[in-house]
Image 1 (cartoon, rainbow, N blue to C red):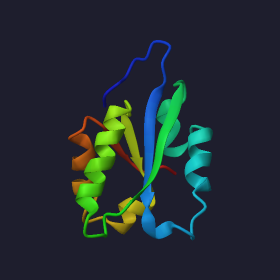
Image 2: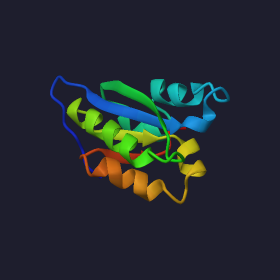
Image 3: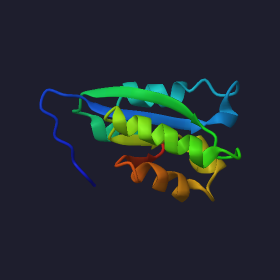
Length: 116
């Protein structure tokens, strides 16, 4: 696992969730885990974090790869180092999880499966 040392800076992270949860999930579980540095965010106990993006994945749509590539490019330009994929993505698109991860890893973004 890569360790990032930031001197006076913030670790920039992003969270991606499944678009199918829109209107169903409050995403409070993700934010509670992040704010309390619990579950998948426990690795940041002593880190100064900045949540740069909270986006929905459209891995089910026809344009998903192009859209995810565009998001990955923007995240990389913003200095995001880690992306947490919500369990909703991991469960929803288990057959595509490795493909989704590969897109972001190509842009030097470490992908962690899960938020809470």
